[in-house]
Structure formats: C-alpha cells, structure tokens
Image 1 (tube, rainbow, N blue to C red):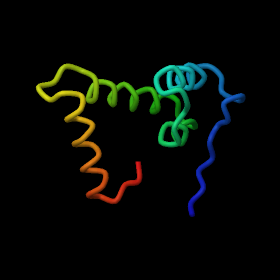
Image 2 (tube, one colour):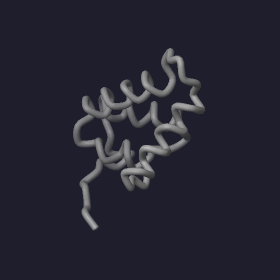
Image 3 (tube, rainbow, N blue to C red):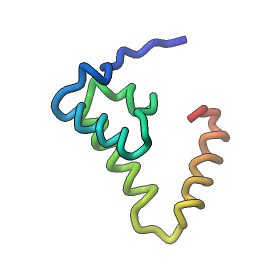
Length: 81
C-alpha cells in the first residue's frame, strides 16, 4: 500500500492550520482525502473551495442528488471515498 507523508494536526501552522480548522468545523474531523493535501495548503484550499461550490453552491440539482451522483461515480470508478 502506498504511503503519503502528511502534516500532523499539532504541526500545522499558517494556511494549513486554517484549513485543518475549517475541516474540523465542517466535518468534525479531518478526512484522509483532505489530509493527503497537507504538503500543499494552497491546493487544499482551492480543492475545498471547488468542492464547496459544486456540492453546496447554487445548482438545479438538490444537495441530495449531487451527493448521490458523486457516490455513483465513485463506485463506478472503484473509488473508496
């Protein structure tokens, strides 16, 4: 299994600390899919902003339908997230 270096919560500073704090506020924890971006906090921030726009922004699809679509696509391509 591959191993990706990640910055621990207690070692996070600056922008990474801000993004970790947002993740905890949003989900109650920092999911691994977020944590693996810890070496590039700017990419993490951009990724989470894109996710927020796609999943919670204005759309003709309900939030539930967007979640369902994401789940079906993930299952189709074999993604465990």
